[in-house]
Image (tube, rainbow, N blue to C red):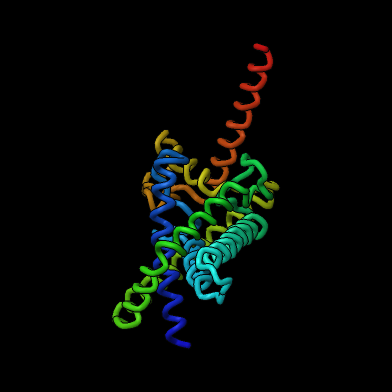
Length: 255
């Protein structure tokens, strides 16, 4: 039992760190076109991907025997795709409903459900599961076997979870303040937009206290209180909304 727990911790560690790297590169070169520290936590890890890798690893051990290898793998890929989509949906709802925080938003995507999941990204997760099951699982099995035979590395995994626990406690403390602010105003805070708002405020030289500086990892270290940062975020969100309305009116007038 202890060995299985260690293996799961190792998989969570690897998936969280590699997933963070993938999300950073995706945002830089495909979506936001800038360097953004993704996710709810401060450090270079995304727990959602840690759970995702653990799920896919487990799916590969589900006994499926249709008599055809390709059919067996297809069934496992579909199971993994459903599990990853469910994981994304549950995680998204926890943050939106429980914390009033939106970590991602698929509202503009066709067929989306509550802006949390959509067919396009469900297809992407299923494709990722296919790549993992067909090409990567053998390597991950080797990594796990190496870890089991080199338990000295467990120190680093333990250190990771120590830092992770501190980071989680800090981020939850921040989320309590965000939730109170959002609940009082009947809104949901887009987390990455909040980070961008803080960065924009610093670049414009509007911070009143210059003791701190936001960085790639420490996005909220701006010298302002959380309430001030949230107020600035809401002001900028309202400005963008008004600008869009004016632009739409201008387009209607031209027509």
